[in-house]
Amino acid sequence: MKSAAGRPIVFGNWKMHGLRADAGTITSALAKAAPLAAGRLGVFPPFTVLREVVQALDGTGIVVGGQDCHHAAKGAFTGSISAPMLADAGATAVLLGHSERRHGLGETDQDVNAKAVAALDAGLATIVICIGETEAQFVADETLDVLDRQLASSIPADMPAERLVIAYEPVWAIGTGRTPSEDDIARVHAHVRSRLTGQLAGGADVPIQYGGSVKGANADKLLAVPGVDGALVGGACLDPAEFLKIFIAGGGRTAPGSVVA
Ligand code: PGA
Image 1 (cartoon, rainbow, N blue to C red):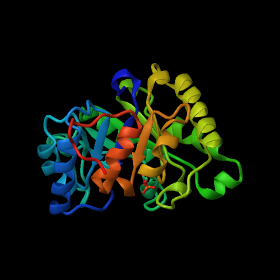
Image 2: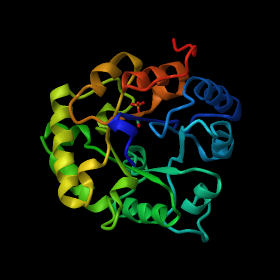
Image 3: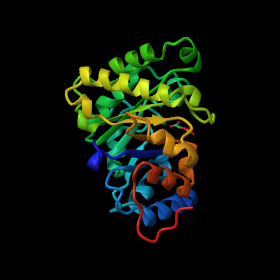
Image 4: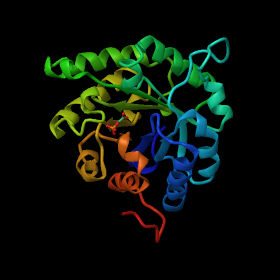
């Protein structure tokens, strides 16, 4: 997936937040303010409200995706959700390999790869693969090696570049209020870009988002870093005004007359 005119793509990961009433509040604010998001704004709500969010945002151009999927299309996997189920609910995207799944639930690069294959088979248009180093790896200067391994193993060999988005999220920056320096982010994004270019036909055009403590207050700075093609936002995306502020910082426009605090 490539944004129109190469402008940044801002996605919001609701994580395990969002009862039906919350989802209604968020989607009505987003639908009013950003009716022409044209694939550059997206939300990843919990499965329980996915269908409602799809319906509420229908026609707005805002992407709706699932936060994970199983590697099998169906089967005896209690509690799991398959990629065809996401597509059946109207989702067009999926988030894979988030650090809370890699580090919290032991998900491996091979798991992420198999899930990406399932998402491709189910016809999901946009597959976001998250990568990132832990704080210990950052301190030990292992960041680029870790990312190389994650890129090489998590992305299916035949992944069509236009359906891939990479989210670089240092694990230690997620939900902590801390971010790498702009120089560090630029260095990492340039490295990831060169690896993607070597690994994948069309890899030079795959959007690379930065994620980890992106807020309205630092979005201007982070989205202006060379090589940053957008943001994957956690906590700040639950407040639509804050989320739209980040979208605007990335060059997004909202509807005339919409109020964005
Ligand atoms: P955060 O989360 O914005 O709350 O740091 C980012 C993410 O987990 O994608």
